[in-house]
Image (cartoon, rainbow, N blue to C red; front, side):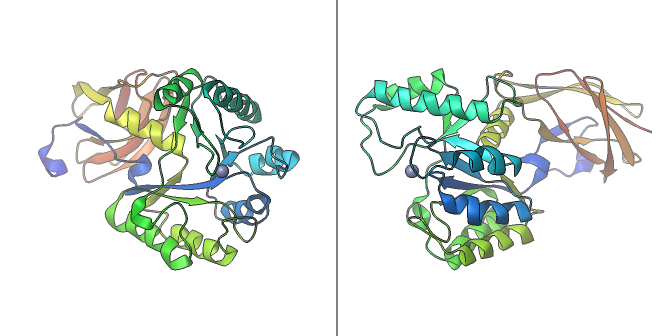
Length: 306
Ligand SMILES: [Zn+2]
């Protein structure tokens, strides 16, 4: 890769992940079960991490008040796992169960703009007589994104002990890319991990948080989609200032996450002021590069020094 000194002023890279972290990492929890509220969310909150919880609001173990208040206030993210977890005999039944769960999840976060993308996980262990094409139509109609699948490298959806969980964290730290962990019960309920093993894994994530973007599947999907379709055009570049335009092929109504950019600036610049759509932030430049966030498909980005 060419060093910063070889690039022209204004040349800009879109970082692989937000904040130029080495890997993205997802924590996903199925079925909205009591041990998530009791054992998982307090430990996530303690470390300022988020998890994505795939809810079934019409099952008998669902604690409506706790999910709508405690989990929401803790900043957790909610995914669609169908209203009933009962499965589907046909596409019409699937659509009913999925659309009602979507409605519920949209109402849980009325402060977020709509339409917005929601992560979907198909319920397991029940009949699901819906073809891939029928599912595709449902995804499109309700702005759903199927979550990333479990990974055969780790022997199925559940990893049984702390060593196995920590191995996945270490792999992300060493190799980069994107890793993920799936859970049902933690310290109880079903298909359970021990809370102790879960906490050991969280501590490993915490120790590596400088390298890992611990996020939710929709944020990861948005970042990837915007980044893959991103293009940067230099409008002006020189010692006085740099102006660039960041565009993306992603649909701006649904793909609205800022991307992390790294732009080549004059070597003498230390503190930079970056302006887009009337908002200005400051960022330190180092070795002739400055890193900052910008929204694709919006106004031009202006970079200057003080
Ligand atoms: Zn499930």
